[in-house]
Amino acid sequence: TLGCASGMAATHTIFASLLNAGAHVICSAAVYGPTTTLLNTVMKRFGIETTFVDTAETENVQNAIKENTKVVYVETPGNPTLCISDLEAISKLAHEHGAKVVVDNTFMSPALQNPIAFGADVIMHSLTKFLNGHADVVGGIIIVKDEETYKQFRKTLNQLGGVIDPFNSFLVHRD
Image (cartoon, rainbow, N blue to C red):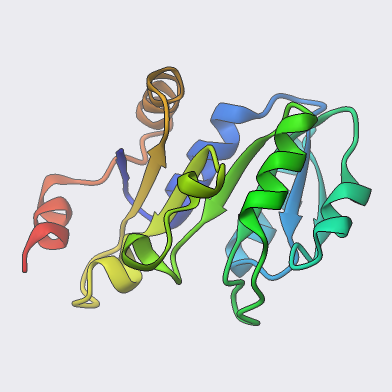
């Protein structure tokens, strides 16, 4: 688990850790707006191509896969449409093509959904919303399922400078 200064710091860390110039991302069309902006601006400038699809239809993911697809980024339920994506089917499909599955699980929180149980590789939560519960913290968290990915993400997070500060960490952990 990695604490980040914001949900977008977490999202940026994930993309910066998993992608290189020439990579392709498939992203839910119903996704947090700044994620779309990050992919269409900063990541595009670094040679990352993105295809936005309605991931509620797994066949859309299948049709968008390319040889250079490295990440399938799914927000489910989607923001703001609340569309539901089949994480198990998408994970199986992505892994067959060598891509990692990243899930923005902010709306569900870990209390209601564990994407790793459905095959996801990485989970991102905005701490600003449900996990904090007090509406007084800006933060994000990245959860990975293996030590190698953790080490890779930790190094990138430290280099980008998006680490959550101790006081905000304390505020998230209070009752």
